[in-house]
Amino acid sequence: MSITKEIAVDQITITENGTILIRQTTRIMEDGNELSKQYHRSSFVPSSDVSAQPQNVQDICNVAWTTEIVSAYQAQQAQIAQEQADRQAQQEAQQAQNNLPQ
Image (cartoon, rainbow, N blue to C red; front, side, top):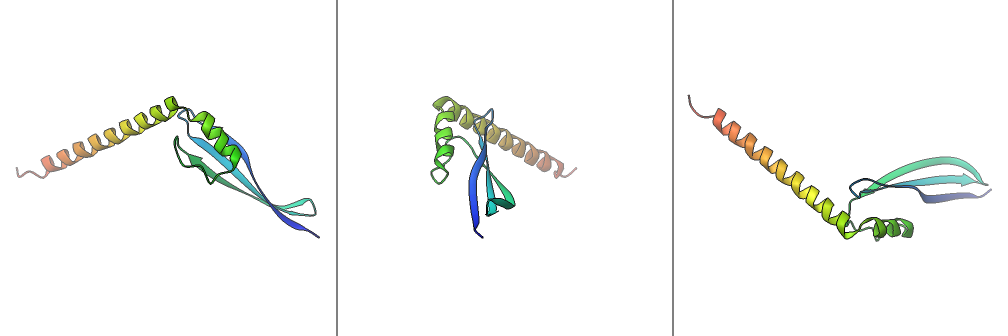
């Protein structure tokens, strides 16, 4: 009777903005029969450190994350941050206006 644990990345998806989604499967096997299976999902945005990931994930990231993709992702994130800051400032201004004495 031999019990083994097998871990493998069985799914890799690249989204439109360059985010890499992976699914890792952990299987517990006994004499070739699967006793249990669990999934773990992770995501990596362009230019993330993926050095601790399996080589196939690193290779896909290196191909998918072109200079253009990384730049577009960073620009998108900067735009989102600016929009959030603008909304926050607008809410604070509205709140200050509502707190003025009548």
